[in-house]
Image (tube, rainbow, N blue to C red; front, side, top):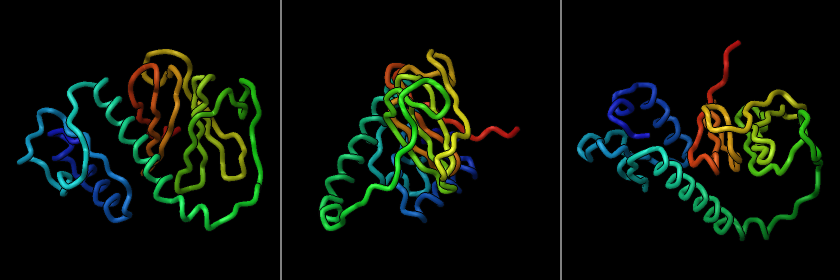
Length: 179
């Protein structure tokens, strides 16, 4: 999110530089009050978009992420055709209990090997360790912060978890809780 405050933040600068160093995808979301002359960190060289409000950013970001996934599949087709894969395992089953799913619609794995699943019809996110052992869950049906109305995709980056919340028309961002 490229806002005047973000452009002044050393923490944001570090995150952007780390993403650039690791060749991670960057989609700058330029707030309407940020002038082109104020943009730093070469963010103006990326194809991003300008947003006016929360609904606008959610729909634009969802569109960009979906397009990147389609392009990645198209770009990697030749690689996928050259490899064959063997089934390894599956986990979870239908239900509402911990470790069970009702239409798992998105999955992401962080750098520590934790697996995050967007559990669409259970209105929650579930976390598993690298051995597929249930760790935690969060969320419930609703429109408040931390609640979901059909979480349909998920991504992780630098410790943050990003959830696309389809019917609430926004992206929610979570950081790890310190207990």
